[in-house]
Image 1 (tube, rainbow, N blue to C red):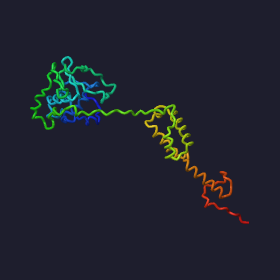
Image 2 (image 1 turned 180 degrees about the horizontal axis):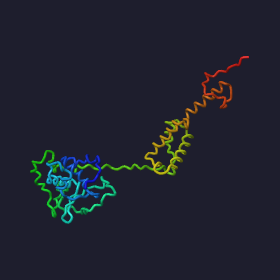
Image 3 (image 1 turned 90 degrees about the vertical axis):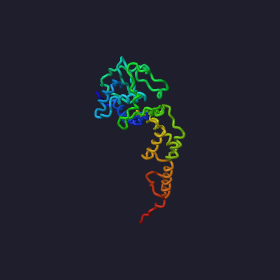
Length: 291
């Protein structure tokens, strides 16, 4: 019975599959829906044609059989026999498909490791040696492919173009888990210099922020405490402190204290907080009371 499967974008980037006729590519995707939870199905081209190409009168069981041979040569499927019965196993099935746990278990026997004993060996163009001889079932009539002149346009198998250099190598996987801040973490000197240079903090402020930074991230539990780039996390921490006004930049604080001192001198009063106003000296005037 056909089943729901997943089609990924990598399907269209596989060059070995891309050099095949369109109906061969459609056949490969259709095999996923016919395969059981282990990626296996019976090798019956007539039944497969009825399931996948029921409305295409131009696609015959013989054409389906030749397309299956192309997929087998490209190492996309494996055709094999057990006790005289032909089966198909989809290569790298578990890499691309994750069937539902409640799906019915497979009743089809798995293929053996030795391909040469089965009736569908690879051609010398693909593996560099003579193909194995068919024992249980004759291989598809590949010699007759040249006589398929009556095949519909676009269905002629391009068997000779399938070479190993057409394969797409998988990309290297990169970890995205991150890491926690080490228990013995100390603020690196370049990090502190960046905070003083770009954010205007003084050394005492940077030391206090580093202690708060370490205590905060050591206390964060689980996945929230994992970071891919702790330097970027420190920079964002410093910028947030500036934006929130939690810590005044050193140069700005010095200018503010100087303005307060000059204002106090203009009023001839001591620099007590209640007598100090943030006004420039030129705006400060002593008002003499009138009698």
